[in-house]
Image 1 (cartoon, rainbow, N blue to C red):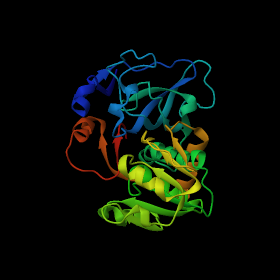
Image 2 (image 1 turned 90 degrees about the vertical axis):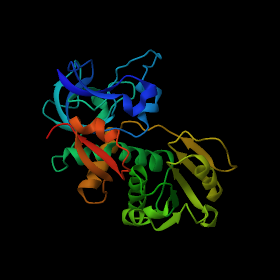
Image 3 (image 1 turned 135 degrees about the vertical axis):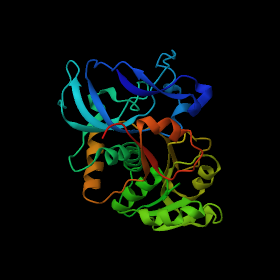
Image 4 (image 1 turned 30 degrees about the horizontal axis):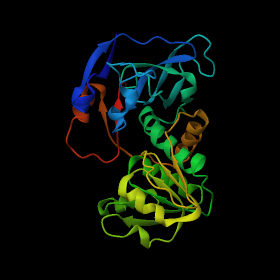
Length: 306
């Protein structure tokens, strides 16, 4: 048996979370079993259909949330290659499978990458979703190149701060947006300019080649006007209400990618990337933490095991 956090009622949201005992998972073909050391939950994942149903739209509750993880491989499924028992790993669980807020998780080997010995499990976990999302938004979908100008919405946030760092390191000129209180944080992560969404107008900035949007809504709409013809608007919010002539409008969902995770880990080891984590709590305390009304900056890491 293992400890795990489960959700059973979509209407209850975070209030419906509970810590329970469940049977340990078994490894299917191409799976590994990972003993989880660190995990976390994405703020809105309890609103995702995949948290509650399988791909055929059948109910799959009680389900275990959490998709980012770092831990140690303890078993291999039939036919699994590329990883070995005892190997330190980090990665991103499939959206439709039980997640990482548990002592053990069954996950496809292809969704994991080796975690270097010099990166602890908490940092490894904190790199996964923000790192992959920023990497894919900027380079895979945005085709960002050195010398280009990029506008990063929510530059002090968990994903935005990673996008700022990766874009700067790639040789781009980075303009970040946020509330006035976020200015110092955004500057510390490396923005060249900061636009206060409470006061400054986005229309006042010089045109950019790429907008990387994590906010959606009216702010996303306003940012379309500052993109050069031939530029790109890339979003993770699902906001795609308007089109602008000459601007490519791209929505995407982040995917696991071993080679990208290895590149992100390399940059972290070399001191070229920082994580944006707010603190660490245990699995036993995770339900109370997620139900807290305290405002938290950065990602909360769940330490499942020391």
